[in-house]
Image (tube, rainbow, N blue to C red; front, top):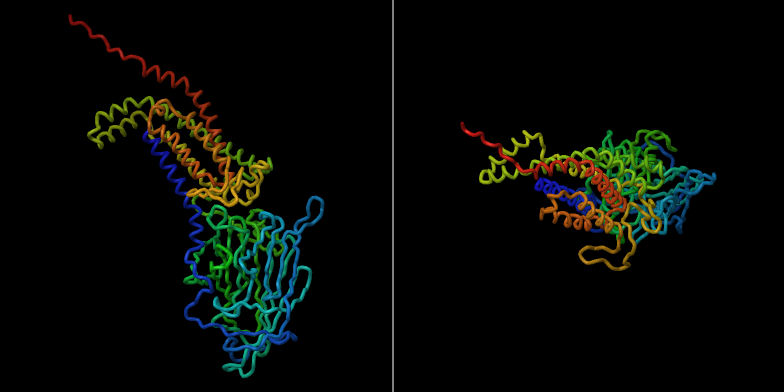
Length: 618
């Protein structure tokens, strides 16, 4: 039994250790895979788009007309810019749901710029990031510009000229600008078209609508700039702020959803991949927040990019490429979600309980974990939310969830202890077989298998409870590491203010321990170490106390896990600490239950064997 136990523990440690070390690096590797140097990625086989210039003045909007010969984009020069001389900013407060007092507070603050008609700030007023609100359009060294338009493909330069502003309503803003194309090819006269960007926001919504209108009137019958009409780009990164995308504190996933299936896309900026399958939606998902794009177009291509952004350790971009248009006027509609990955919010787009009446969008797939343990994680999350509704403290909910897991596993734990006791009873016979067939391993294995069968004993029965708890631990890790509601969830004021990150009783400002990289003194890992050592003492059997290997495991394993768990989320450590405490209580109860059997077994082993007397011969 000792060898089987040691083997089971070693396997358990290997699985958990590899998982803990690799978990964060997988998502980080996906994110930086194939990163290209700064600058736009090159697309082979395409020429650079022509230079376009804004027209001298806005004037009346062009009127749509039947298409003439030729398409826009075959010119080579533009007219001078003589539009608005200064930038104009528009700030919109999107109201949230009324509070208990009936008052309404802003849930999002949006800042739009007439420079390109872009969105430069999207702050979530109900979610904090250190001393400020969560900014979903993250800035590098330069001010960020999201939802830029470039006439052409991925190589095209985004339009940065100043647009005219038309404030249609409190929640609708238009930016418009005229552009000219020089005479070229079959076009004898310069062409003129208008670009309009209309933003429409809704109260109590993290989703907004963007409408792009290209109108060439009589002079521009279509739009084709080096193989594309335009590219709508989001970037350079979603918030909140981060030091690195290591999978522990934050991560990035690039997702598409189509025909009921979610797909994780690979990103390689050295060879930009064009997604032409027209998915229902595409997303850049972080650990707790997501950007989701829903194009309402018959034809479009997608491209994810991690092209460098000065001032950011990592960038995440989404490009929506509109194929060439052979019509003088097009009106394209997009909807974008920029908000938290919470089940309560994202499921609204399945049941129609949203301002747009959307149904069956399955945006919740941007938040769900994938893998063979995802059903287990969802079940644990379901119970966690039930306990939180009973007692609105996630720390207490975690303890109750730990108690539930221990109660459910108690029959297996009890069976494992009985199997250990049974193993102790048959240990002398096993040693006898091992000594008898030590020079013939095959014969020894066959004899031991026959012996186990005769005794009705399974050698793995004592290890089964331990092995079954490994998936629980991994699912708990994923849950505590990714569950949005644990972000900023307070357990003990002044000590554990956020269950999703490691706690700290003292933080070094500009110092990290060499090799380990620790920058804080944490109390929970030390409490875990004490509970694990005490748990090992309580659960040790008499034969294990005299075993040198088991003594080593008793001390080495907790110390090893101390280093592994030092920077893990507080919620995970709380689960493990209370799991150890409850396991000790269980073991004390089981030991009390098995005490009579152990005493009887010890007495039977200690009793002398009296040989029967021989009968005298007559």
